[in-house]
Length: 195
Image 1: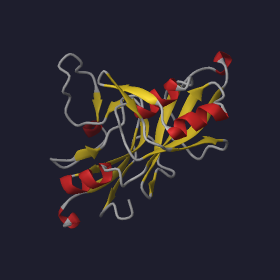
Image 2: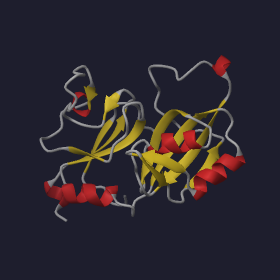
Image 3: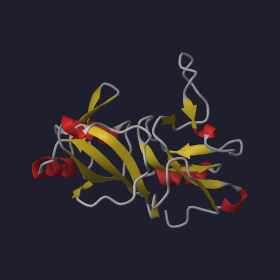
Image 4: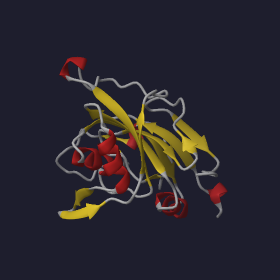
């Protein structure tokens, strides 16, 4: 692969941004797009997406072949989800085995995934808006590692077991980690070796 002819970026997508460069929604022109974060070359694309409310690790590239590879089931994607309530071992077990979620009006059984409770949070980007007040009850964090990426999958999975996601941060794609990046940080890299 002639990766050196292409440009690659690791970014920390803030919440409130769409994972795209062009607004395809005619009725909502005030959307924040990835191009608002920095000056990217033409033909830059996001590899996979994070929904508007989700945040964290997002890879950008001008290379479609690299994009296809990283989006494939060969590459793990790890998310930290803050859920409503203290998640139970039973719910974690269900998430590991697979749960039914709705995709385009049909029921889809998610593949087995790696799920565990997160007791000590690493550095996470600071949000402008607080998720919610502690008076609304306890929350807990889980790590969910997938090799698939259906639309809003992690949110649908935690809701399916009774613990809706309040905050979702992608912390890892393959061997690329969010690390100490903060919302809006951009790092240009020569390749995604080790992803």
